[in-house]
Length: 114
Picture 1 (cartoon, rainbow, N blue to C red):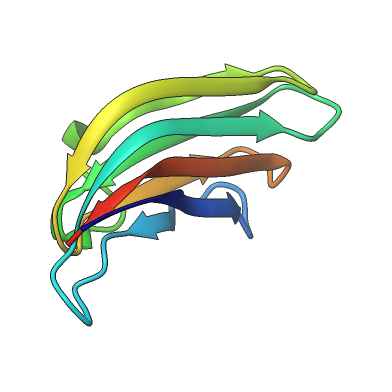
Picture 2 (cartoon, one colour; picture 1 turned 90 degrees about the horizontal axis):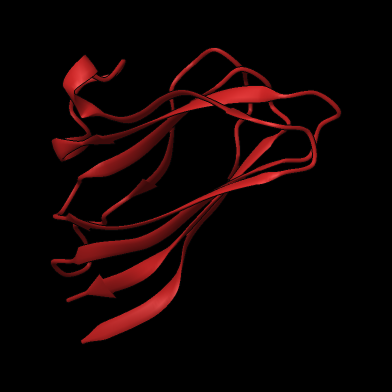
């Protein structure tokens, strides 16, 4: 069964630290997910940067360099970065962000499959 949904809406609670924005649940039943789009909106008054990682089994924090999809991407004030990706994830795989300022807001859209 597929469920199209907003997988995560997230505002980082601190700058300069990796935080989990979404993880594929392992209960009450096995799930997989396909992330179709990720947006990063800058609601602040200055340009800020973000990093995005996809981590297998959400095992290693901080994430290894090889897990980064985006690194220190600048988002101008009042602008939104959007990426259509088609990332497939298994149970316990996670999406992590690192932001230079808490004015960056992350939205993750996709499908959960059980």
